[in-house]
Amino acid sequence: MGGELLREFFRDLKTHRMRSALTLIAITWGTMSVVLLLAFGEGFGTAMRNGLVNAWNRVLIIYGGETGKVYQGLPKGRQINLEESDVALLRAAVPDIIMASPQYRKNAELFYGKTRLTTECEGAGQDFEEMRAMYPEAGGRFIDANDVKYQKRSLFLGYEIAGDLFKGENPVGKTVMLDNVPFTVIGIMEKKLQTSMNNGPDSRRAVIPYSTFKTVYGYKYINTILAKGPSPVSQAQMIDQIRHVLAKKYRTDPADDRAIGIFDTMMIDEMIKKISLGISIFLGIVGFFTLMIAGVGVANVMYVVVKERTREIGIKMAVGARRSYILSQFVFEALFLSLLGGLMGLLLSWGIVAATGLLDTSSGAMQFLGRPILSIGIMIFTVTVLTLIGVFAGVFPARRAAAVDPVDSLRYE
Image (tube, rainbow, N blue to C red; front, side, top):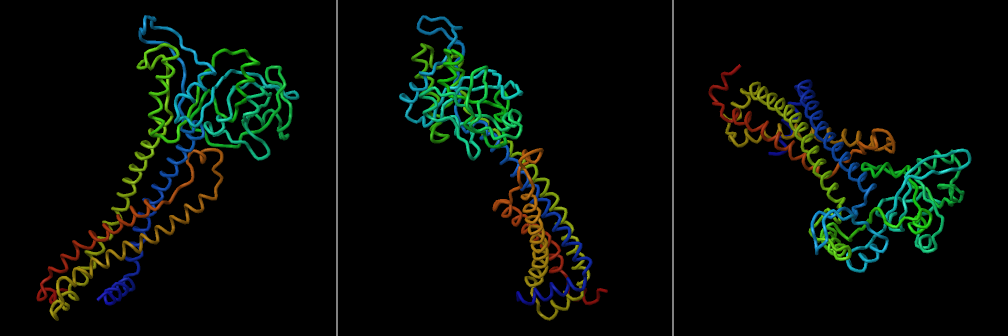
């Protein structure tokens, strides 16, 4: 039976080449619309999430504030300033902390040769590299434990400010004046997409050991503490523990989130995931209706086929063909036509996605759009929609064909 259905299907394709070609083009175009819209939507969402991770690699940002409640006889409105020692205190009291670093910051002036630039300077520890995704280019390195321990004048630069400062020279090993104090460049940050800023992009930032920063500038208090747990779940649990530890030291109400501020950057990650999902759903709906229009075209074609083959259907039924056979014949043809056009659309979409992947996405608008991603989920969704379209586009014309009266159909012209 399957072989006979295939022979009749290809015979009909051969007889009505133009009609079949236009139907296949419609299905192919609709499939490409769905697949490419979803692929670019997923690529955009991935680029946004990666850009966030490159700014804050799923960390907690801890900062002092102003007390908003009276506590143990102390008035509200007291200023809470965090210190370097708080990092060691938190590491000892909160076992889930796997990375932590104090963070100083100020505007500073860099001078090399005849070039003088102003930039954001940060004092940080070795864990800053992973938590802020500030990875060095080959041939350089980030600040390490010895830099902090011995208060070395080591300087790590963003790639943009390094390019402006050194004009094509290899910066590693060169001496730069930072606020009139000589520092040795130990590394340059590799290029990265950053969609969340912290007083400017990391590409234009200078980083030195926090111990050196304190010695050079005489700061008593740090700006923030960055901390990271082993997983998002444990990190959410860490917030209360951190607040209780610092509240005990600074004599504030643990429930007073104005006194000890803790921002979980995972909140932004979750928000971006929701935005990405919303965009994907919207693009999927647009593509789905585009494909449905092609499905309506298939249904119309099948109605025409039923009308043209009314006499043939009557003859088959007169010689004993069952209604189930007539139904399966037209459903099979509509389904095969949908899946054939869908396969062509998937192959063309794969080619476009592969070609787009060869483009440079490291700069310009493309770095925010990202590379389109043709995932298994997208292909399963598309094939499912095509199958439903094929079935529904074939069922109704097939029911009409199966309801044909053999006697009347033999007189049909």
